Image (cartoon, rainbow, N blue to C red; front, top):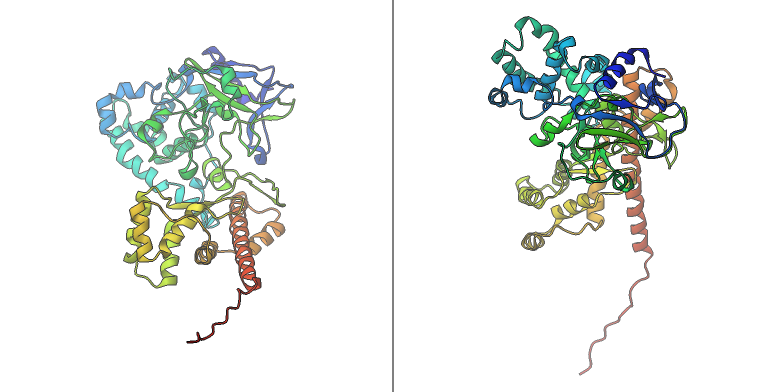
Length: 492
């Protein structure tokens, strides 16, 4: 079973050395809540079965496209196309402009041209994400700066490769965003051929697998290139990632047809010198979707990168994404401390600089366990140290231990309250909206899911912190008094 629009692509794939077990795997359109177009098991499939193989020659990257060679390495570097994603995006636009003369014409023809990601939302929809980190991480301004500073420069340098009349249709800013979104949502981070050999049995028996992951992961939740287990990671890198990482970003035909969902992975992509293999990691029943997920991402990242959210039953009740997180910036901790203590900003700047030099975090992540990160507690206590204590800590090069004393607990409670205030609506208002608006627009619904997931974490963490503070206070009040030692005047 395959979608009719995929048949020319699958024929091209097999003609060019790709193999696919069409008796075991098919493709269909699932509901949007299940990822849309994806792969399905046509029969019961056992663990460790190879579903398809992809020759490295069919991978689309700056290493396989002929454009960099035609362009010339010197000019390519002068245009700064050797760093970030701009080089790969230009390669994809150029290959697309070649139409049937491109090796990847059948592949490019099946890639999406429209996206539900916030990169393409209007201002009104983006307001629904206020308080979340999504808008800040879109990188739209940075991407457009790269388009003007790198890509347009490249187009002007080589009009023989990029005829001026082709620019509006094939090399516009809009096409640049489309290609960038294709990379963001579908690329993989693939190590060069010739990495240390590991047997397939060793790979599959490893906890993490030598699976491939997508190159475009984010910030504190980035997948690292080339997992230790040898698997390929799923989720692309940001434009400002390391140059070598950006070079590994690749588009992998067929592999990018598989959807992802929290806790559902049943297949992974493994690399060998000459080909990549999609192999099942557990038995799959006939009719089940085939999922390829590297790392379980929070809804804020799923929405930003892929244009969807996961809504699953939560262990504590209700529905949401068990991988949701909330980011707390260290500067919010500092500003809250300064407001409460009345200290001048310069009186703690030296401590903050030292904290960062020691490798301290500048962003703290709250998770669904509702615990305060130890690093956040340590920084809070660092701010409260007396001058003598601060000198000792610096001399020993040891930040304070993450002991949640009353000072740290009080400040962190205020920080969480301030973080909650970043959202324009309350959790109660969002819950009422979720219950009462049965048919709200998709963008509004997905933004609401992201907000609710973050607010649950913040409110539950704050509630747990306040309960712990109250319990500690009650213990102190109920503690028996110490021995009553009466002092008598000594007789002479």
